[in-house]
Length: 164
Image (cartoon, rainbow, N blue to C red):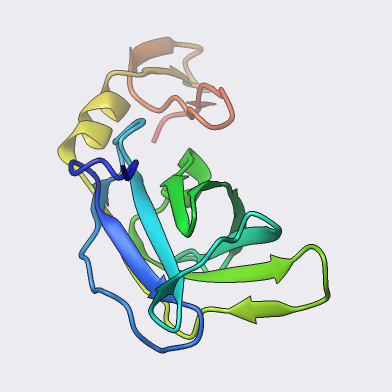
């Protein structure tokens, strides 16, 4: 019995044929723990066991940077991919390609087909941003004002500055 959960999308790629099923995947930038899918890998349209292989998903982000995710085989040719925050932290299109490297030989193959997912902006991000603390100091009057906004979640910094 397959571990594929019907609630998840499944990308199908073949190691030798430029063939895949096109599935539109879209995630909101504020999504947490919901950006996952399965990948079914075949070779010449046949099931293949890749347990002796290092399987890496390369992702090209919208800003031009790349990240690599190591994948673990769930059953022959089936991989579960749970995108971490770094793989969905910028609004835009992300392009993916799989590299399979045999650990017992020097053989390495990259899937001829790529796939894509998109991260879209959402209102939640803006609303949450408005609920953050903002402190302003007026150098001329010495007044200190505090309002909600501008807390950098990545760095933990609270923005403090003079009058705008």
